[in-house]
Image 1 (tube, one colour):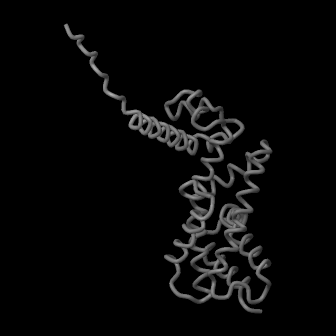
Image 2 (cartoon, rainbow, N blue to C red):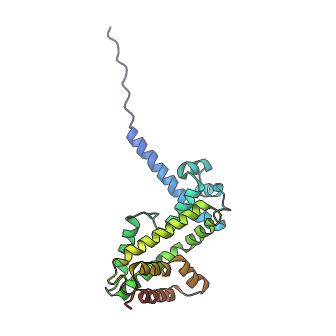
Image 3 (cartoon, helix red, strand yellow):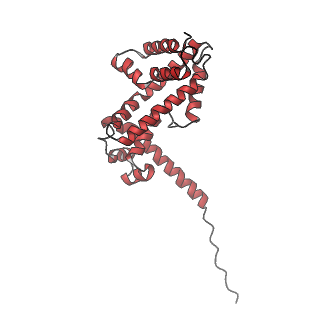
Amino acid sequence: MDAVPEQTKKPRNTKRQREAGEAARRETKRQLLVAATEVFPRRGYAATPVSAVAEHAGVSVQTLYLAWGSKRELFTASVLAQLTGNGELEEPAWRRTLLEQLTAARQGDTLRDHCAALAAVFCTIAQRAAPAWKLIRDAAGSDPAIADEWRTITLKRHETTAALLQTFPVPAPGPDLEAAVDAVWVLAGPETFDLMVTVRGHSIDRFRTWLTDALERALAPG
């Protein structure tokens, strides 16, 4: 009698399982990122335990570490998400996004128009990112690694400022380009926004007008 062949097993769809696993991990990271942006501002970086973030996201502490590696990495990612709107700080994504926003905000091609567009875009970012700026500055005082990260973010703003000024009709007619970049970097910076809006109490509209005037004076010929 002929032997009955064993029933062949259907091959497992490992590719589909792998893709499903990756999707689940990305969603877990996203949930933790959202939780971090909500939890860290309440007590600050140093006083917030990872268990509070994990609980808010509905996952275990072990899952948090598997997803992000450390409390510091998750905190930094949450700050970048608030600063950039999408977490993309690296070029060319962040710079391209800013250029698109500037183009959309500009109503003409004079130096004044470019300064007004930059002031408008900066105010939009500042209103969203002001809590994150304060959070990471405070955290930098207690964690040297976060202090290094804040320095990196600040210097990247300088690089981006230099690139944006290249699109202006007259980037630096009076001062040299480096001086112009430094001036715009400081004027359209988180410290200036904090002083004028938070400390001085100016409205966003008043600050935007002030910033437009200040940028135009800094870049105007003579």
